[in-house]
Length: 56
Image (tube, rainbow, N blue to C red; front, side, top):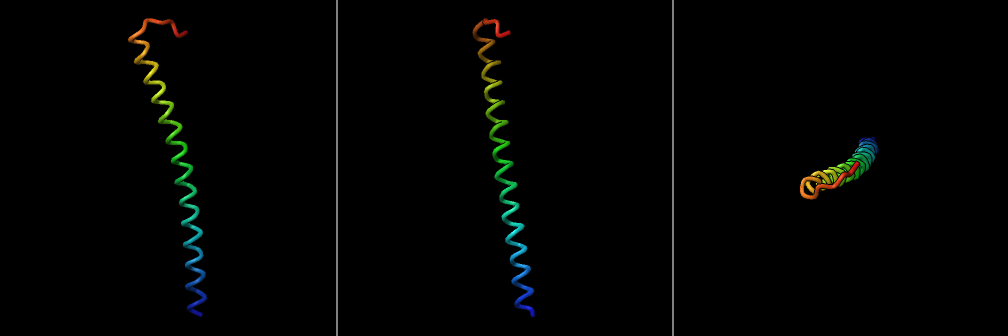
């Protein structure tokens, strides 16, 4: 009985581990998207100070 219980517990831990990895991968994608957007915004602001161009 204890062998069966330990297998059930280990399979639940494995499922939680997979779910945690999926959430981490989603977070990494969002973080990269935001980071690239911030980098582009910073570049535009810096270029606007160097070259006097009307952006809008």
